[in-house]
Amino acid sequence: METKRKLTDFDLFLLGKGELYRAYEKLGAHPMEENGTAGVYFSVWAPNAKNVSVIGSFNNWEAWIHPMKPIGNSGVWERFIPGVKEGDQYKFEIQGPSGFWAQKADPYAFYAEMRPRTASVVYDLSRYQWNDAAWIEQRAQTKWHERPISVYEVHLGSWRRQDGWRWLTYHELAGQLIPYVKEMGYTHIELMPIAEHPFDGSWGYQTGGYYAPTSRFGTPDDFRHFVDRCHQENIGVILDWVPAHFPKDAHGLGYFDGTHLYEHADSRKGEHKDWGTLIFNYGRNEVSGFLLSNAAFWAREYHLDGLRVDAVASMLYLDYSRKEGEWIPNQYGGRENLEAIDFLKHFNSMIHREFPGFLTFAEESTAFPQVSHPVDFGGLGFDFKWNMGWMNDTLKYFSKDPIEIRQPAAAVRLHVHPSRQETALHGLRNRTVARMGCRDQPRLEAAGLRTASKTKSPGGQTEPPLQQ
Image 1 (cartoon, helix red, strand yellow):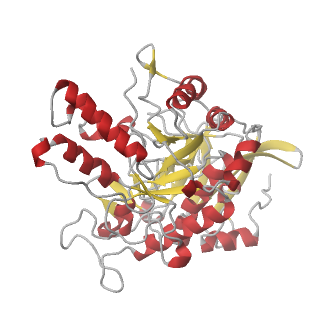
Image 2 (cartoon, rainbow, N blue to C red; image 1 turned 30 degrees about the vertical axis):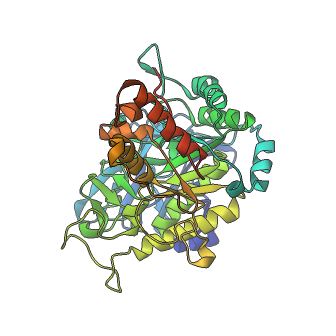
Image 3 (cartoon, rainbow, N blue to C red; image 1 turned 135 degrees about the horizontal axis):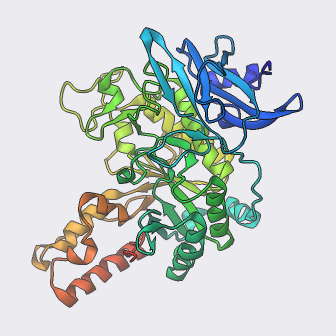
């Protein structure tokens, strides 16, 4: 069956400019009818590929059955396949230059198999009926800088377990986490990354499927139900978002079409050796557009209320965690990553324009100027700076003997003061009480003082207690 083009010339023009903010509606896998026949339309950006095929559970993973066709010189390949249905697994088999061959997951997939399996899964996002219109309208009218915000940060996989071992589903989390958050007086939940990721130990910070809520806890519509329930209870939902880097897994974005497509070719710009990950090439329009579309995707399709952008410092500085000779200066000889700075400004301008009341947070603890100033005034445009330095400094402060204590630094403009569940990643599972520089009952009092100080400070975020 001949495939009718779904991407218009204007779509392709915007894709090339990095401004197709709803790219996920055209790229990826979309159930539909063509000439009265039900099936799925597939498309993928792979400009350096020689051949691309759709392989999956519907064709015994054989590449010769469903080859795709390029759309002119756009770099996009497409194909409509009759009979493919929701729930079918698929990948793109790509033949590239110099004998390259790989089976890649769909960068725009809405759903994915549970690890260790890596296939994308066809999913229809058109069914869910939202019941949070009152919240969305109220959010758009709220002046968040004039309102107290108290954020409960949580990793869904470890917050609480059913029968001591099984993850809670999105539906179960709606029934247990939301009442707890309301009882404790929080205004927002901040989810550590729930986009699909291959390695549990990364806590989601090495994202593989940017458009797919992890299947560990249920389906995409199950996650929508969780967000919907939060909004019905007047609880906002913020998501940790990781546009700084991505893992090297063979099925992922790295060396996607036989070239360094999403990442820089030079490892001095394209690799985080400390983390074992690759760095996005923000100077390539289609790559920055992939991330911008992703930010809009979470806001539009999942009604999220904010994004906390992870590892911003690693984006801002070309010499981040690098020794002399391991990085390339910018065109002016400086250490600032000008392409990443432009991307962050573009991200904040777009997301605030398209989604009134949406909040953005920069997880950034360096002295980079004007992180939370408007783009029009020379800033990066974030609403708040997620001040990780505050957590580290106050823990050191309270761990000292009272005779050693000096006054800690005061709060700075538009900061969030976090004490993170993520500290468990860095061996700090003994939590706040054990780090107090005193004993027994005074430790509890000192921990309470730290929490009270944080809560009453502008932008304070309260520490989540460990759940059993």
